[in-house]
Image 1 (tube, rainbow, N blue to C red):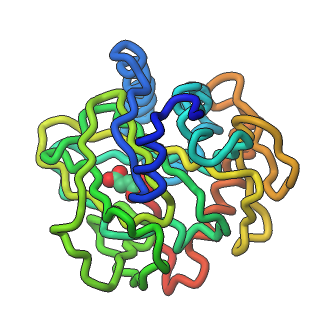
Image 2 (tube, rainbow, N blue to C red):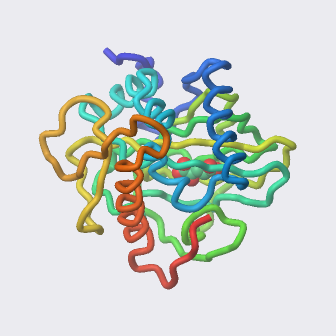
Length: 278
Ligand SMILES: O=C(O)CCC(=O)C(=O)O
C-alpha cells in the first residue's frame, strides 16, 4: 500500500517515467522559500549562479529542510523504497523574457550513478507554464538504452555541457508538465526531458532534488557525497553530507566546495572542454 501516491500514480511513474503534479508547498511556505532565495540574490546583487546553484542544501538551511519534506519523501519512498539518499539539489532559474532553455537530455548519461531508480523531484517556486518554459518529457524513454548525446556548449543552454540527444525526439509524443507554484513533478533520471525559453514576465524558478536508493554507487568519481534523508544506509558508498544549522554555516560551506568540485569533475569527465557553470 503506497504511503502517499495512489496505485495508479505509482503505475504511471514506473511505466511512463514521470508523475505530476504533486502539491508540496502551500502558498505561504512557497512564498517564504521564494523570498529566502530572492533575499540572498538581493544581498549578493545577482541571480543565483555557478556552484551556489548546486548542492545548495549545504548552503541554505531552508533548502536542507525542504529536501527532507515528508510529502516529497513519502512519494519518493512509494517509488524506490524506504532507504533514501539525496545526491544533489539544484536551482533552475530562467529570468523573465529570457532565452535560456534546456535541450533534450537524459541525466543518468552524465552523473556516474549506477542506478536506474534515480528520481528528480522538481519544485516550482514560481509558475512553470508553457509560456514560462515548463519541462516536457518523452514518456517511456527511461525504459530503453540511454540515447546518444553530443555536447553543443550553446550559450543559452542551462546544461553544463549544453548536451543534447543527437537523435530526433518526436515532439508529437512528448508531454508538457506545467506546474503552479508549490507543486512538483517527479521524473526518472533516465527519462528524456527538456524545456523552452521563458516568454513570461515573471522569473521561472525551479528547485530540484535528486533522490536515489542507498545501494547506488558513483562509478566515475572516486569520491562523492549524498544526504541520508530517510531510512538506513547499509552500503556506505557515499559520504553523508552534514546539515547546516544556519545559512552559510562555515564548516558545511567548506564541505560544499569539496562536494560540488567532485560533482563538477564527474559532469565534465570525458568532456572536450570545461565550461564555466551558469
Ligand atoms: O528546469 C528545467 O527546465 C530543466 C530541469 C532539468 O533538466 C532537470 O531537473 O533534470
